[in-house]
Length: 86
Image 1 (cartoon, rainbow, N blue to C red):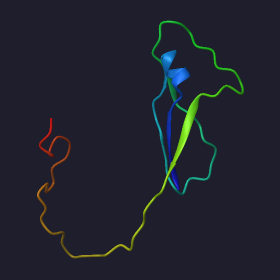
Image 2 (image 1 turned 45 degrees about the horizontal axis):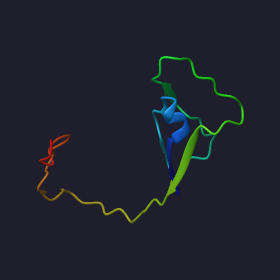
Image 3 (image 1 turned 45 degrees about the vertical axis):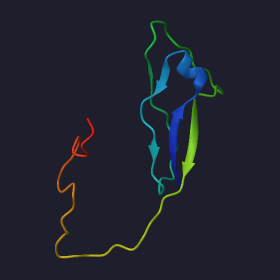
C-alpha cells in the first residue's frame, strides 16, 4: 500500500495547505507533513492537532519484461502537454 497526504478541510479553510503528498509503498520511516501558510496571519499548530488526511491506495505490480527496443506509441516521447489537452 502507498498513501496520499491531503489537506484537512479545517486547515485549508485557514489557508494552511499540504504541499507534498505521495508516500511510496515501500517507505517505512516517520511520516512528515510539508505545509505552507497561504494566509495573511500566522497559524498556530499544536501537538495533537489534526493537520492532514492519509489516504491509502493499492500499488499494483507486475512482472517486468526486458525488451531490446520499445514499440512506437501514439504519444511517443511527448511529455507535458502532449496528450492534446491544454
